[in-house]
Length: 375
Image (tube, rainbow, N blue to C red; front, side, top):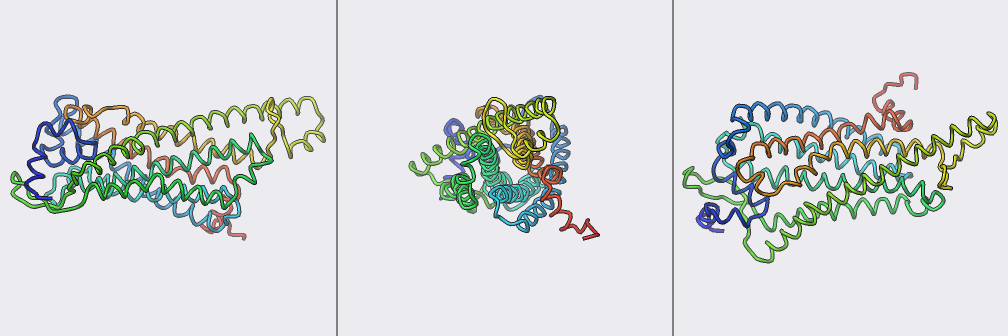
């Protein structure tokens, strides 16, 4: 594309009303600086201080997340993939590890010292395709894997005798591949709609590396469809599934707990010990073993952590273009950093959940770190 045409299009006032979020962020990066558009609410100095603090916290969490997810992948690999749950948890750890890598790069671009430096490329727009954009797609993959894990545990309670035939290592592997293709696959389209190139900017008197949109009607229509599917429907639907399954699992765990208390109070110790191997949930007629119950509890904690950490992303999706078009751009930038923070926390704490709630994982991790000296 001709650089002069790009410059003319970017300077058009009417362009703001028709561009997609990715185009808008690109436009904002090419024109007036981020700090000069917002009036009130936050000063330049306040915004810089908040950015430094958030980025520092996020990067520290990302560093710990890199280590913990690598350890988790190694432990699950050593445990083997004969159990379907190990496959899905490994896929989740791989997604979390990828999110940490791209989050580190994207958050580096938010630092004032990096953002305001005279680099030979457009920090904000290049970051979208190489950092935050890809991070967003992988976060959706992690969301759907969490939804799959939660739904699988629900099936274990609803149809315990059939779930072993429905959820096998083979079907779980296929499910992980399909989820990855449906969530990350559309990212490839963004490299068709936008490509990297050198663009000359008269106000800078310099040619810098940037992303340039391809203005073809079919590609623009395809981008709009992908934005709706991947930017709205996919994450909201995954979030709704996780919330629904988590509520169901919590209610069933309460029924199991109530049933056990009633058994303990009405039967002798011998009868109670015999029934423990196959407790029946009150009012449902289904049964799960103690091992399955522990796994359900672990999934509930994982899903609950995901729900809490995913709330900022859902809040950001509620705002329209006017929120980050000018007046509230600094606030929107802070909200984006909080999104990164939530994703980093969600992807870093799983090792704590596994260690405290999964005996095989705990033993495998201790052996890996050589903490059990007697063995």
